[in-house]
Image (cartoon, rainbow, N blue to C red; front, side):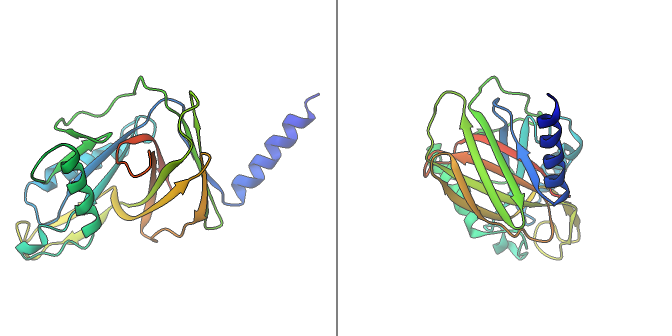
Length: 233
């Protein structure tokens, strides 16, 4: 009577040995914590240092998934942030528009789509949207969301590759002369449509990536429904 279970365990072990990586949230909501930052902003290093400390927090990937978007509007001060993107700036402006605000700033934290002024580690959530699971194998991502209460199945899926211990010697701008070391840096962001709660696509992360962060939203929205993340190595 125990043979089927033993066979299943053997197959799962072979799959893991073959290089498949599986990331799965529980049904309870995992918070998405975003930091908008820039190497050209003198007030950003303390916020980034706080974010870096989350690497060793026991709630990492379980209670919250952090990521840092580097914006490009401080590049005009003389230092071009190598991790900045106009797309990340546009993302922050979209948040600002949603909040009926007329400006953006750094460092700026966003928790689950809401402006977040605290410096406390997000705790577990009492909301249960359902489980988000993704597998990465042979350069392909397979993602699936199983809603807890028969929620929406047509969704937007987002996958970010994150860089860690990225060192930069800044030679101009507000942080001129400083050696910055940064974590949870968004190196790339892939956006795909989920049909019937599933999606599949090719994924070749930046070789500097040490982790991934993934989340789902309603179509063309910013507020995350569920998030998941984990180490790539």
